[in-house]
Image (cartoon, rainbow over all chains, first blue to last red):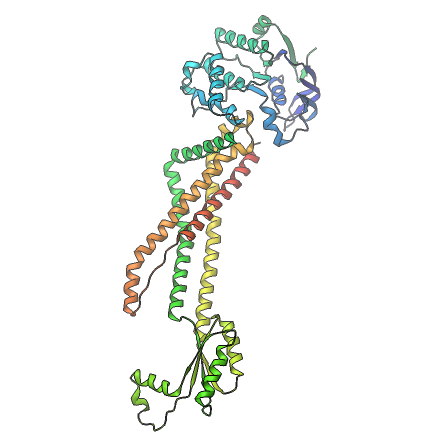
Amino acid sequence: MIEFSDVVKRYPGGHEALSGVNLTITRGEMVFLTGHSGAGKSTLLKLIAAIERPTSGIITVSGQNLSRIRRSALPYFRRNIGLIFQDHKLLYDRSVYDNVLLPLHIQGMTGHDAGKRVRAALDKVGLLNKERARPITLSGGEQQRLCIARAIVSRPPLLLADEPTANLDEDYARDLMDMFKAFNQVGVTVILASHNQDMIRRYGGRTIALANGRVAP
Amino acid sequence: MKAWLENNRHSLGLAVKRMADAPIASLFSILVIGIALSLPAGSYVALDNAGRLAGKLSPKPEISLFLKADLSQDQGRRLTQRIASLTDVAKARFVSRDEGLKHLQDAGLSNLTAGLDENPLPDVIIVTAKDSDAKAMERLAEQLNTLPGIDHLLMDSDWVRRLAALLDFGRDLVWLLAGLLGLALAAITGNTIRLQIYAAREEIEVSRLIGATNRFIRRPFLYFGVLQGLLGGLLGWLLTSGGIYVLEGSLARLALAWNGRIDLHGLGPAEGAILLGLSALLGLIGAFLAVSHSLRRML
C-alpha cells in the first residue's frame, strides 16, 4: 500500500529530516514508527499524506506516485486518509457534532446518512453524549478521541496518527490504543508515530525505527 | 445535485454568519460600498434628468428656410412638399408671409410693422429634421441650401451642438467615475475578505488536510463578497433615491421660478437591477481575487 524508495526530505535552510528512506507497508498492517523526537517520524507521516513533498526519491501510496500527483488531485487523495494530529486541530467555533461532520460535508455527503455516520463515529470513541458540546469544554483525552472520530467518520482505508497518546494518562492512552487495534482488525491500515516504548511492546505489531533520518536496521 | 445545492446553502449560511459575527465591520464596509456606488448612480440620474429636460426644451431642432421674394406662394408650397419628401426630413411646414405677419401681430408686435405699407416678411419653410444630432443637421442644411428658390437658411444647431457636447462630457465623466469606484468596490471587498480569511485560516488549514477542494473553501467567501456587494448596491440605490427626494422640493421651486415644471426621475427598476447586478459582480470579483491569492500563499 505504501512504498518509499530512496526518499530524501530536505527543508529550506538545509536541515535534512529524511536521508534515503526505503520501506514498504502492506494493506492491513499496523505499524509503529519510533525514534527520538527529530528522527523524522512526523516528516514521514506528512510525506505519506502528501502534506509535504519529497526532495528526491519516489513515494507511492495506493498506487499513486506522490511526486507526480497534481495539486487538483490532492484533496481527493487525502479523503482516503484519516489524519490524527498531536495538537488535534479541532475547530473550536463549532460543536463536537459539526467537527465530525466536516469531512463528510467536504465529500458532499449530507442529511440523514451523514448524521447516522457522525453518531456512529462518536459512539465508537465514546463521545455520543457530548455531541452538542464545544470542543474547548472537553478534556485532553476527549479532544484526542474527537480527533479520531473525525478521522474515521469517512471510513478511510488508511489511518495516520502522530503521537496520539502523548500528554495522556496511562488509562486514556490504553483506551486509544485499543481503539486503533480494533480499527486495524476490521482491515484499516494503521500507522502510529510514538516514542512510548512500553506501549509498543505491549501491543506488538511491526515497528519501524527511525534514527537520523534513516530506517534503523 | 442535491449535495451541491446543500453545499451552496451551507456556504451562504456561513457567509451570513460571518457577516453577522462582525456587525460593525460589515456595516462599515456596506456603508462605504453604498456611498461609493451612489456617486456614479447619482451622477447618472442627474445626467438622465438633464437629458430629459433638454429634450423637453427643444422637441426637435428646426431649420428655417427663407424663400426668395420672387417665388410665388404656389411655388413655395410645391417646394415644401418636395422638401417634406426628403429622407432626412421629419416635417416641413410652409408659413406664408401673411401668416408670418399675423403671428407677429398676435405676439403684440404690430406697431413694428404699422408704418410699412407693404409686408416685409418673406415666405418661410420650417423644416424639422428626423435626426437631431448636430452632424446630421449640418448635412441636411447643406442639402437644403442647394435647392433653388432659397434665399438663406437659419439653423438652431449651435446650442444643440453645445448641449450635446455637454451631455457627452457628462456621460464620459459618469463612466470614468463608475470605473474608478467600481475598482474601489472590488478592492474594499478584497480587503474584507482577506481579513475574513485570516480569521478563518485554521478552519481552512484543517479543511485542506481532510480533503477540501479549493472550490469548497472558496465558496463561502464568494458568497460573502456577493452578499456584501448586493447590500452595498441596495444602500447605494437607497441613497440615490433619498438624494432625489431631498432635492425634489427645492428643484421644483427653482423650476417654478422659471415658469417651468421639473419631474425628477430616479433609478428605474431596470437601472436599479443593473446597479445591483454590477455591485454583486464586483463583490464576486474582489472576493475571488482575494481568496485565490490567499490560497496560493497558504500552501
